[in-house]
Image (cartoon, rainbow over all chains, first blue to last red; front, side):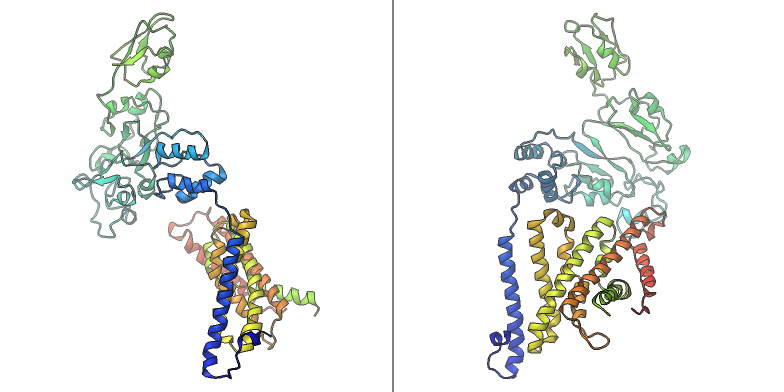
Length: 343
Length: 200
């Protein structure tokens, strides 16, 4: 039956042994192609146009900070599975606003975070070496050989895996070989956090200025011998005891700040014996002052003050002890009459 | 032997004795690649069963009624690949339209089956003469495709189940993931070697 369609009266000659397979396979391909083209029309699935709009609103870095595989995946999950719309770290407030308009939802942008190194070592001149590493120029490979070429097995190895991982060009290396994060360019996508084999990088809210510049869990005398900058955390716990809000915990000879509790007062940096804690706002903090005419004497500020710097009787105007005030600004937001100003 | 008896013996052969993965060593890439999670292994298995059954049917028709009459059996690989690719594309479109949930759960595995050698393998084995010189007819080809798919799914699920448990085991770092997976695959193949001599 089918034979009559394809076979011409040609005998089994050379021509037919070449052309017959070509014709049959060609026809097969053509039929399949036509069927698929037809099926594509019949079974066309409408893609929600909001997905396209959201993809356009996202930065397109495919960094994965939102937890999805890429920007397209995030857009699809916003439309289909009602995912929160403020997860895009690189897009920030601008992207949230655009997506909010597309989806008709409201959401606040999450507090902006920046990547911060928790090690002061790792440069050309401030690292103590165990051996000369001559392998692949990568932190990930270097740390696999005898716990890394640097003496401190918690510290930065200095092969800049974090810089290579950063798609936003936010990490630079200065002439001393030390990595610096540009807070303006950093989008808190977390690529460097994942790239660092020593887990030295953490994402910290932009509004916090106090950082513990160490990740060493070595015990007291050893930590200082290992550290190239001799500014390790020795786990003495002074900062933890001094912290007015109990935001610092010492675990395994290493202090860590809980930034959800931290009020950015900088007290810990002033007591750290090894100067391991840095405070970029030190000396720039203002002192609180209560405007007596506005104060109604509710004592809320006195209760919230971490250093008991505010005193005053109930229903009497309060005053601030300027020597005790640490400038944490906790009282400013709490005052119902907006009577406290920073000077 | 009645129909059911024949079916039973074919099932035992396809699932245990001549298992596609562990006896014929076909379709190893999804066996190692998609066996990390039980859920996705199950989805992949279902997709393979479906495509293998469909491919058996279509390839058999194309071979018997298009290639054999013109003596073009030597083009079978080319024609089968073409058929399987078109079939998978078509199935993907239909599933995407009619069952978005299933489409989502199968994800990337559905188009990947196009290049799965187990699917091509079953199509070619269906038209290959058996030991006694006879060949499968259309019905038995389709059944063979279906049962081979079941055998593939069975092994894939066993592998995924064991690997999920292996994730929790305290193993040396260098053995985690693929190395232990390969050793596991070898041990499973050895175990299935025991079925080899079985006569049904």
